[in-house]
Length: 270
Image (cartoon, rainbow, N blue to C red):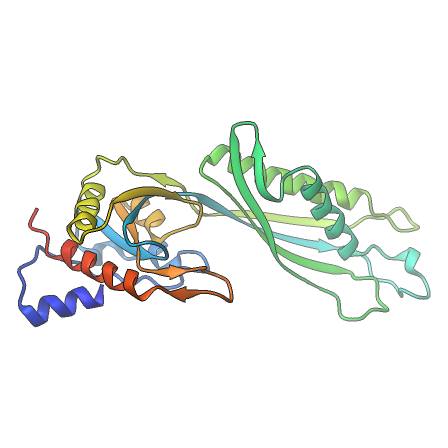
């Protein structure tokens, strides 16, 4: 985006009205795009977003995502003196995650024609090994392009933690309490290949000598919220590879191709 603007200014190139938008906190929830002050963006007819991947592929759809927060309140006791008096929050979480994994509700989820993913990503618990852990907090996510199936995944998570709590009791038959909260982070979307922004993106890709194509993403994009705000938005790659790993890198040639595509889009006459 910045390269395109610099070239326009440097060469005094003609261009249609342009709005530049740099949303923050994409990785942790698309917050910049979600809470954008739309009145400050003007009324763009279409949007173009850049993310990881090949520059010739236009992302025309992306999955939706629920965040899941679980707090397990167990019962503390001395782990050596009276372990039977305690209810371990860690034991409850372990049983719940094992339940989800065994029944196909954790990781890649395939149930008939329905597809989705889930992941338990953060667990915090415990202060000492000689204490039966009284509390655990857990963060997870559930994704699917199908809103109904996504809600089903969330429901299965809740049931798994409730079952686990019932199955861990102390000597007084007391159990842990489960506090379960799920919030929509972003909704899925799908653009038609006939959408003007899609056709414009594919033409720009072709103009720099690449073979254009379209794909659907299983990750969240700023485009999820831009589309929800009423701005049809295509996402193009700019060369990042092996994202979210220690091998993440930038393919420089692809990045430079993405810059040329950006300039084509920024100076398109129709």
